[in-house]
Image 1 (cartoon, rainbow, N blue to C red):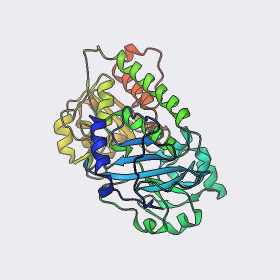
Image 2: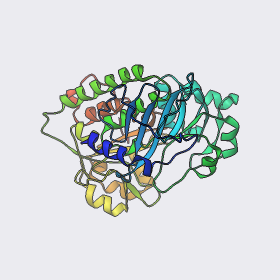
Image 3: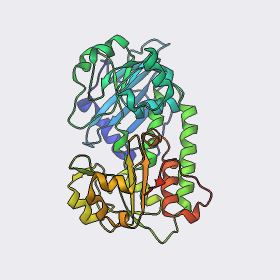
Length: 378
């Protein structure tokens, strides 16, 4: 089905494609695909390899009838072919990039090309020594907020491309006028954990690292499925909900999200599993209490200098203590300020899955030591 959809996208490509940087102006004519490239789990991108270039297409995750971007990758050591299709032309392998998010940096680190990063947004959230050292030494530029980066600084860095996370309804502002290609990565909209993880293969195409990264990804798939298979026959699947309010709003992941799928694969029942939405829904506290009040487990991610406790959680907002998971002391916390949860989640869902599996079914993982979550202290 995925391939059928992609073929449909390709057929309407010329109408819907938009982008940045240099545009090839000549249509591809009678070019046969030189190498078959199969995307196994991800729904958001597709690849065609030709003798003289690679064609990488990113699907619009908010409108499946449209293409978000099409990139034409050409070896920078070879002459630019004359018969390129429309799209954003990028010469590869990239050697100088800007990364807007922690996830971009973590992924580039995983594939061994972190040295190409010359500028980042919001470095205080990037828990990678190379980036922090670069910011201190001035070899990596602090470009400000990801939602509103300092364009003048980006121009000064003069990257070959920018890795950015698209948000529905938002643009990249005046960076479009700078002529710097923006490589959009809507991986967080993937409904499957391994689909999101497969985006590491997307990154590898821009650095000519396909073979190395395919091996990394295959290991992730193997590990993930081994844990999942171990839980396939469990009959007791405890109910669970996640996270906290931000301000007066509780953003709840939909039942069609990758986190819902991961909880299911870990032998639990996500309390919103009957909602097929992929994106999060903003809810009032009362709505969450009504739905999750009797849930057996509560998993909380947070970022604080000190670990959250039952006492501090109740002090923060007393109604949190109304949940059964609070009363029964079944809360597990992950302090993302101390753990590399956000860096690892898109790349290594197998790591996160094993933590989940251990929480819900510790008898099946007797020797496992959790990487991220721990039982909340009093």
